Amino acid sequence: MSGQHVSVLGGGHMGRALLSGLLRSGTRPECLSVGEASEAARLALMRELGVSATADNARAVDGAAVVVLAVKPQQARAAVTALAPLLRAQRPLLLSVAAGVRSATLESWCGPGVPVVRAMPNRPALLGAGATALYAPPSVGTELRGAAERIARAVGEAVWVSDEDLLDVVTALSGSGPAYFFLLAELMAEAAARLGLPAPLAQRLAAATLHGAGLMAAAGDADLARLRAEVASPGGTTEAALGVFAADDLRGTVERVLAAAARRGRELGTLA
Image (cartoon, rainbow, N blue to C red):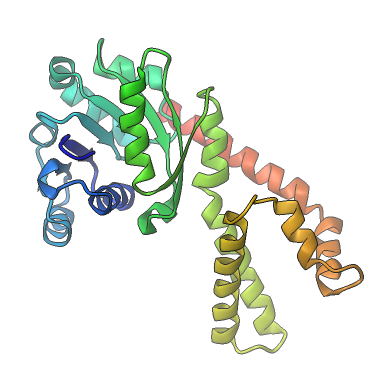
């Protein structure tokens, strides 16, 4: 995004992740601005990232080529409608990471002529290892799609979905997904401690296993079934453990988990 001004509304975890990623990818600090209500957060962003930050959202977005909406879904309407006259006058790209808030809803808040792209990043974006899915209505052209994708790629991998409804599934899969893996590692460490392993060592090994398995999954052809089979030797310890998962219907549990998260994502959109 070199040379183009990008404004981020919301300096929380995701806003900070995107700002940090853009800086790492070569965007100059003077090309970035943040609208953030919290004084402590503003001071931290200015001190640590060198970007301008203000409590005045209109001042933050004035002149921006891209405005990133990185507030909570329940705050999105107030943030956008307050800026609608300025957005209509300047027509920046509005890139929303507010879960569940539909593009048609965002367009209605902005008014005619403001292009909208939705994105669903995840928490590993904080480390530049995020996974982001994007959706753009047919009216958004190639150049603006490219601008949105460059911002997403500044914090990790980026993919496009052709159907906006699929973003709710993405939210359930990669958006919420890190928490599922953290929970599994946490439970593994607790079980190992109950079996006699010192708790700090169990947690260290669980975290290292999570990290290493993730690296293997991200490498090569990412055939997850093959990777699992390569660990599970016939008649061995892993096969015995996986048999317990199967007996307890882990597959069905995971399907219900993702369905619940996707359903909640749709509900959040109706609350905005």
